[in-house]
Length: 293
Image (cartoon, rainbow, N blue to C red):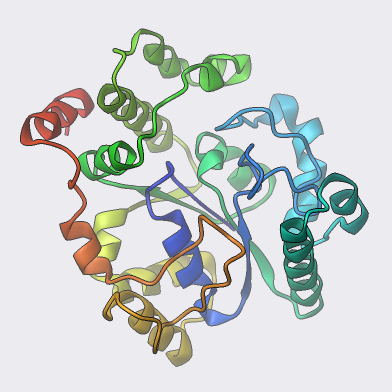
């Protein structure tokens, strides 16, 4: 299955909560062009050239075989060793190689947590048979998060993909962005939301609704994904989402140190209360106007 949505929309959190039942193997951002977490041929034996890499039927010959291996939990040990040999890379190789092998032997499924697959979500549902959960965050909170991190939209990553522009012409709106981060992030949110709303075979999920009431929300996502909702999974989700954010005692998940983008324990209700931090009232109003929300 695939959990996607724009970066900073909660995909790592949702992915980790879905693994609480023990039926999934977590795979972090195989389409991220930055190493780490991407450019790891052991996980995905294909060359990623752009952020928000667009995959469709017209370029399936390149993407379908490697992704079939990934979702089947077939790890490419030799390809990974040829490409990445630093101590960090070797630790990651052992972690993923072992997880893939044990997962395949015990009948687990792969869970891809990948924001960079958001514009290709329909292909994953249609060609790979993935259950796709697409997270959508409130635009003000989303833009505020990007602003705090100093992130900006590189329009070239999108416009240099002819198939993407052909299938989703609203991407062309990004050609005339004002030169400021707030407007760029708001425009990316608007374009992505438009694409997702007409993509068939995916489940659009509001981040804020899930964070406000995580237990029934995740129960619904488990049912959608075909996962068993067990008392153990519920306990882990409650500990991970509804407890204090300080310290590690009693947390639902251990922090491995091998992934810089993975889930950290939090109080999900408190997280949504602090979402707009980083934007002035005027900037928040501007985001609302730019996104029509």
